[in-house]
Image 1 (tube, rainbow, N blue to C red):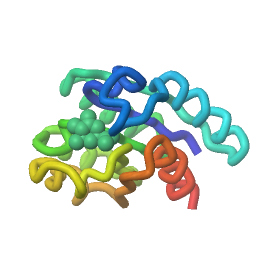
Image 2: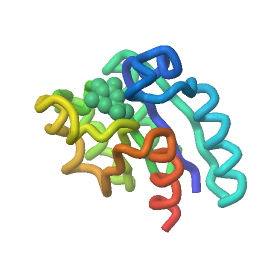
Image 3: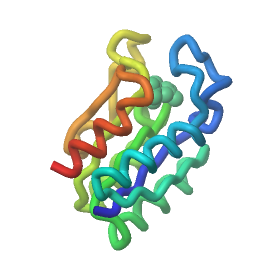
Length: 140
Ligand code: DQA
């Protein structure tokens, strides 16, 4: 199963960015660990990160013909990007929305997700483990 693992804005700053909320691992090390996990379960991940909404939309579009599923942490775009929501809906692929932090325990504006309704499921609050749980969910 080919899976696009897509990270949105500011997730390239993991490790430096508010480590008390997001942990001290870099995105590079999270992806490397996830790639190792994927080998053990027969998943084939492809990793993407962008700070730009348009680029994220292009990546999501390309998943349609190049992937069997999507794991996405859309960062702050989660809370207001109807364009990213529409892009996910256009793929017709299973998609898992993930967040490192428990967004429901945080500011009110993080309680709203534009994308949950077009995703297969949502996993949040378990730190870097959310990516592995999402892959596991897609494989099932
Ligand atoms: C996040 C939560 C979002 O609210 C925030 O804007 C992020 C990261 C998370 O992984 O916990 O950038 O998606």
